[in-house]
Image (cartoon, rainbow, N blue to C red; front, side, top):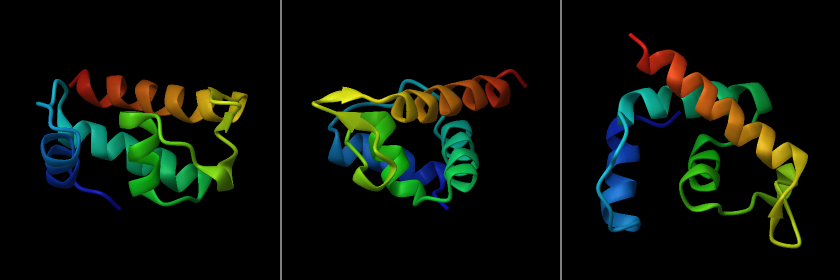
Length: 86
């Protein structure tokens, strides 16, 4: 599982950027989807934040998202906005 602090640190230090979204809600959404697809939450975060392919989940083909890659990203987005409503 990944924490909001880890997401924030990754965005600031690895991506040299400032978070524009609630990192705790984002971490919760990433963890939920990670659990659903039974895959490492850190790699799921990297897929979302920097479009890094996950070979084990076949998220990209010829540099473009596959249906599975789009589904994972859309799932995270949907869950994030559910959490962020409250």
